Image: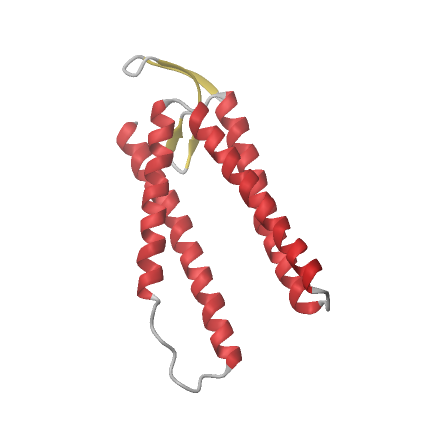
Length: 159
């Protein structure tokens, strides 16, 4: 990591190059972002683990509901961590991340609406379930790629 003074923006501090972009984050920003990332991955992992357990293990409805709240808890914690990151970040970093969120959300809605095609009558249940899982995966991928693309575009704009 190197020190650089950017006189145009009045910023002095460390920067990192990632995918050819300069990411301006303070140590606090990086800690907050890593906290969010860790909670996000716990959210995703717990969602997949609970989905697997609920489809492969016989359990009472009460236990199934309790298990369903585990990923929800990590999701709420991840959202709160991201809000903390945005609240404590400087205005440029906040604008970059908000642009990324807007593009990611828009890409997700665009793909979701594009995938709202009915399956033909008589489609077997397995194919319907596969189509639903494929739709979720495509929407997630579109939102993630849109988020990264939006942040990249905003970073280049504010660089």
